[in-house]
Every structure is written in C-alpha cells, then in structure tokens.
Length: 219
Image 1 (tube, one colour):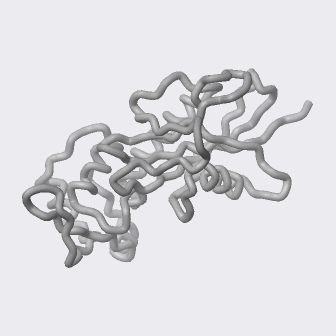
Image 2: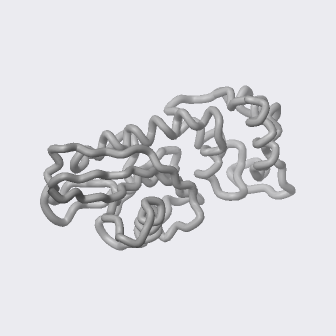
Image 3: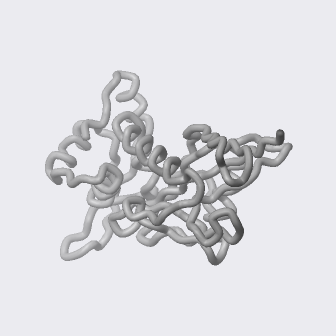
C-alpha cells in the first residue's frame, strides 16, 4: 500500500478588522469546486518545512514570514487514498490591504469566522490553527507577526481583538502595553482622522527578558 505525504498551510492575515484565511478552489475531484487550504506533495529532496515554505511563497509571494508546524492529520478514509498531511500555519502581515495572492485566479481571502464548507478534513485543520494562534497570544510575539514593522496602537489592539474575537478596553490595553515596555514610540505619525496617530515598533529584546521572567501578555 502506498502512502501519500503532503503539507497543507493555513495562511492568516488581518484585513479590515477581520482575521482572514487564504483558500483555493479545487479544480479536480474529489471535492471539485469546493474551497480548500493551499497544499502540495513533498518532493523527495526537501524537508516538510521547505515544502510548506515553497507553497506559501508560490501562493502569496511572501518571504520571511512566521511559519509553524501544527500537527499531522491522517484520515484513513481520505478520498485521495491513504494520505498523511502535515499542517502548518503562516502569518502574513497586512499593510492596509489584504496581501494579493500571487498565483492568479482561484485564490480568495475568506473570513475565518465565515468559512464555506472545505474539502477533506480541512475545517478541522483551520480550527486547530486558530486555536493555536489564540493560545500563543499569551506568551509569544505572534500578534506582532501580523503587523507591518511600524504600526499604531489602534492597529495593534485591532489585531488582538480580531484574533481573540472580543473587544478589549482601550485604556486597559494601552496601560498593559506601557507596563510591558515592549513598544518603542517613533518620531513618526500616521494620519488616521482628525488627530495623527503615533507610530510604534516592537522591541524583541525587551520581550525576551519578560519571557525569561515568566511574564505573560495579560489579555
């Protein structure tokens, strides 16, 4: 019995205050016409991570973005035959607009909370990736991976609210960020309305010191 080994990549971005997932429409059976997360077979000369990066790069053009292995899925009743899929998730920063898929037609950004029926067991994979993402907000810098290098405090708060699926008090959020001391205020502003908003950058070294002390993000 032959076993097919492949990778699937759940690609997240934040656009217009919504967490979105990149989907592609299957062009052949099984599940022809149904939406699916991007995936591919593994070449004999590449690692799992390299295969996932290759898929991510081909679908979005993105490089040097956050990528993490999730879990292995091996439904013995898969309609493709005996298949083992190693799932990853990736975070593509938004810059005011959803990143444009680079692989042409058939690719769409869909809201993570309004997904259509997906092929195979891929809804389970997306749900698992979303749970991992939410959990990691407490003890990693994963939220900053969805932001450009320079960002405003409202943009930062919007990312956390979007991932957590709940509103956060503005004053408390900013107070907690000030106490953590992981943001560097810049001498730059962005016009967002009547009053320009100051831009900030993330300071990784300060976060590492907090992590060593066991201090978590209190959200």
